Length: 428
Image (cartoon, rainbow, N blue to C red; front, side, top):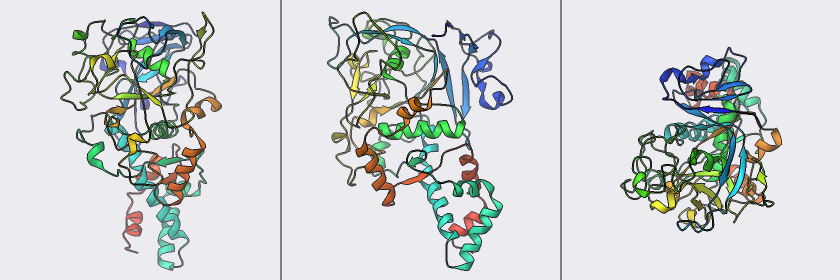
């Protein structure tokens, strides 16, 4: 493991690196050669990991990322802990390498960029269909688009599958459930399934060129603790929570805009409360370990094999204090959380029931990009049944499949061109 030193200070505006500023550098995004004079950083043998913000292509929405030092910590809680929850893991030691984590929970402003793919993929599909039309004017109009808008032309040329493409989330069956707490762009996004959250991270990775994913459960708890060993990141007393977490005592039983509470010791907001956060793991009593063994990052992961029993951490706006402990766990019940969904198969992208209104996620990025076979586990289907459900939805026209790469945002921008507008509105 790389040696690292974690240094804390007040984060100032100049401490953030914008993606655009890094484009001419040979160093990876979020790495600088010289020790910063201010701000938060992690020293590694590649110099210094620093906070950075990356703007989602085609928008003015930015995701702020914070560096996290590597280290060994106690994952889970002691069976003798009087306040221990029913589903908490027995404590094990885990060694983690450095990584970055989103400063805030994924907001609607960020998630909407992914949600709008359903409309844009449908437009690409219409252009492709028009190219094959037996109506000369329609086919000519589509050919003009391909001839004059190179990003759209490149997108239409791509042959994508469910393995290398992205599925766009369908429109909400009942928006009043998902947006129960409003549609403010700075509210945390919620009610998406683990599959949808994973698709978001794959889309984000492929359009930005950086490798994003859901955190592992061990990574999530490590950050939530931020060096603490107490029930809460702020101590063992419930009275310390109000300044740091939205939970049943102060939330007005609704999600709240991210970043309003104080950050934890590592500068990260809302790790407990507001919305519970998806991790990659599925529910299990405890990870396998030999006595006295320190688990590696991957040994501590319980890779999912279905959509049932997926873990969300941190508690949410309606949780009692005992359920926002650093070690507390919530697991999904796929059937119960989709009771009101009238579709068959039920949506792979959305839940329709409480408590999914209090479940969201945030993204992480490893210091060293993961090998292809490992990152695939963070993006791929959890089971053949899920793959079959998604295939049926896409083949039946109730979902859209499209490419995800650095060209996609430019192609989406070209959809605003008059040539496209005229074709889609039948003005040819």
